[in-house]
Image (cartoon, rainbow, N blue to C red; front, side):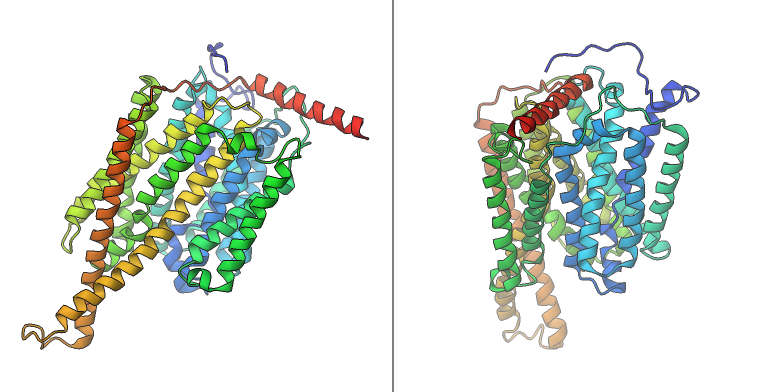
Length: 536
């Protein structure tokens, strides 16, 4: 990928000239913020949805992760869609789909409908995000340095996740959990109106039809990830492989993978090729993601329980903790921009920083977890968690751009990165930690119960029900502390391994020109057409 020098003042031809040039990029940032806020389903309102519908917590989590699967599966074809349709068409289509998704998720109680809706919504949300971000890429980094660009991307994406959760809880506190759906429907309608008025249907000079795309492969990969997510989310509820549901999902997931790998041996353009699956940087990123996000899985398993059951926080106090995580995300993006993007610090150095921050997060809870902690004391661990997660994501996504893959294969590697980072990282870790917590609590409850139920005049006057509650709460705190300690040891071990490893590589991920990418896909489609004619 060649270095690209800036060519004149930045402009967006999609927007009429009566809009000031300096305001044009901010218009697309406004669009992408609305799109990122519009998830169809808002996990922060899960407790309210469980209380007012027939849905379980697992059903809502499954639908939320289905949105991430739809988002990830889009990566492999997002450039093809970009070169087939104008920004105006992509934004209008995404806006209409997300409005429908918000309405369906607000009224339906059918789990399959909810999951399918979120899957489709995630796909369109990613495509609209690409349409906006690719339009302003040269404004953000005229030399197309992806380490710079990804700092902006993760600031928007991870920042909005925290802000969306807060907005959802505040809206539910003011009225009902459905309010967030209607607010986002109105904002999406406003976005569509602004697109109709302010965005022209500008398309590139070369028309590239959607030929040669392995749509069957995309469905099979999505099915595989849905099965994996189902096992992780519902595993504890169905008692893992003791139940037929988990066994069927496991067999189906393995079958989907096997069929896809078999098809990749003879298809000219499989949805995900072996070049992407076996790339060294992709494999390294997959391993780091699974380890790192398993260490961070206490976010999903412990923090809500600790804040609600032990510290006694209500929903608004718990969601206020998102501000601490948001501050960490902003600081992490800022640190990565200055050190990694501008000063070109090594990948190894940035990985060490991320794991060190993760170790501080785990160590703080191990040493300080207690009954009487003030909310402000949680700033340090949550701040470091937010910073660590965003640093590791930016660094290893940049490494995939720098992996040396041909650009035709590069979007497939992004899909693998989305599967491992966004889907598997978010589901496997909580499943493992949640199962470990249940066994540890049972063990500690038995040990503490045997001590407290022994003949002791100091507690003989306490009713048995109240005593059992005290034992259960103490067992929960002790179990959390124990697991935090084990995870801290794992984090320290991996930190030591990374420190002693040899890693001289520095970021040099430069994106090619859009004209170059367009010609590349154009030649690929023409080659497929010629091969079809020869075959016939």
